[in-house]
Length: 188
Ligand SMILES: Nc1nc2c(ncn2[C@@H]2O[C@H](COP(=O)(O)OP(=O)(O)OP(=O)(O)O)[C@@H](O)[C@H]2O)c(=O)[nH]1
Ligand SMILES: [Zn+2]
Image (cartoon, rainbow, N blue to C red; front, side, top):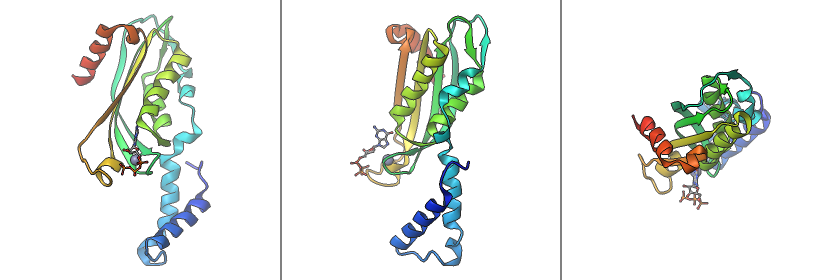
């Protein structure tokens, strides 16, 4: 929570308020720079984390079949406009050699990757590659669906449009049937 330079953010927010023609000294705005600094500490908390660190918890469970955690909600900040994009991540992997991680660790990795200025494509591939590098599974598939506020409240203004990205590694790259099984499970 304390990864950001609060003082610097407070100064910057005061300057932005002045720049838009607001009065930073009016009552309602007095604590706004402080609040924004605290909020950025929270939404950019992932900058302090390496998603891979969450996969240190490994159980020696002999399960070389699909593990899928779907509908993991996330909130991130588009690195172009610093406005939110948010949605769901779905992570499937086929463990190898008993390297099975805790289910919550997949959701923790999503938090680590999304709580920083981001691109949806990078979120998707970083999660997949972190799993490949740590758990060395037979295969990984990551699907991310999100709504980007920079496309809804501003710019092209297309509310409701969803962006879907996927990253496949290992067995899922070659095996279309395995991929479609996961996609069916995600939809169901
Ligand atoms: N590929 C990708 N693009 C993104 C993501 N988030 C936002 N963008 C896009 O980043 C682009 C930035 O385009 P620019 O032309 O530099 O900026 P802009 O003038 O504000 O663009 P508009 O949004 O079209 O008004 C826009 O097309 C956004 O939709 C993301 O996660 N992935
Ligand atoms: Zn954007």
